[in-house]
Image (cartoon, rainbow, N blue to C red; front, side, top):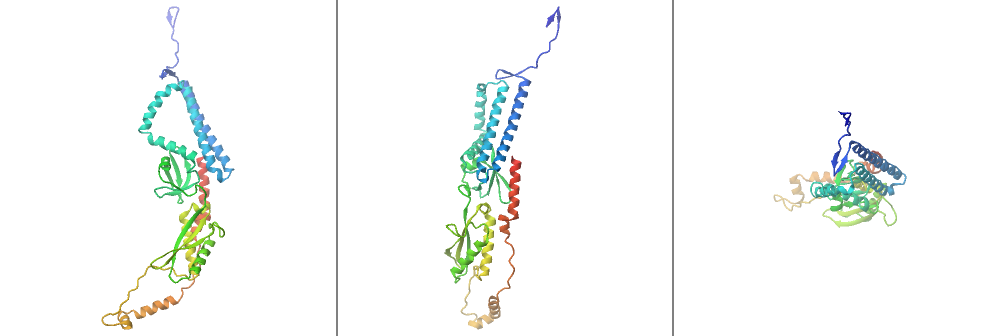
Length: 350
């Protein structure tokens, strides 16, 4: 600037960066960053408020409110991103070039990420797999669904192991949802008894074992426990104890199976029912020209045979029954601790 023949320097504003022909100043960048931060904070607060509200609505609506919280947070973030771009002074129609380049990127390096994101949205709306469901993957992994996020779904096994599964696996592979339609499930526990055992005694012992466990759904009605004779084995009559399980037992199959095995073994022992094992009999007609008792005496089997027969006639001393540990894992302190861990995990997630 010239004044009175003298050049006077005038402060200039910081040079702006040109993006799509629009000047981007430091002030606009700061405004856009502030808008993004506020959007993120609002999304987190909104998700927490919805999650807190869902806790008062009961477990039955848990998955629905989880979906609402996720979708609401995505909408807030999307709106915040659009407003931030507008604060930079960039027109939305100018982003068509960026969208085209992004489409090429999705076709190559970002394809799996985009596929997992879309699969996550499908899971949230379709509800074929939802938070709280107990699922079994094609790999054999079983566990409860705890989170459905942008890239992966988190499954927690009964051994408290977190497994992150890409969302696309739920939409492209076979998934068994044990609690999709209802939480009750039927369990078949196989066992065998020796030939010659009265079937009615076996049935009574098995039903007695089922009635002792707290997670048998009902003792009467259409879902009462049943005993099926399913086959004739080489050395045993093969039965199955068929029981319906409640909600908590459905999600702990290994412990429940072990609990019924323990109860069955105890009940069969109380009724003096023999549990067979594979065995073979060897019959010798002659040995070195000797027959019958002479042949057995030559092999030294007479005394051993008599001792074995005496041992079979003498019942073993009764032992006090110990606690069925598998029951504690399903409905005892161990189960309560697992529920507390799940609640704390939900709080951390919020």
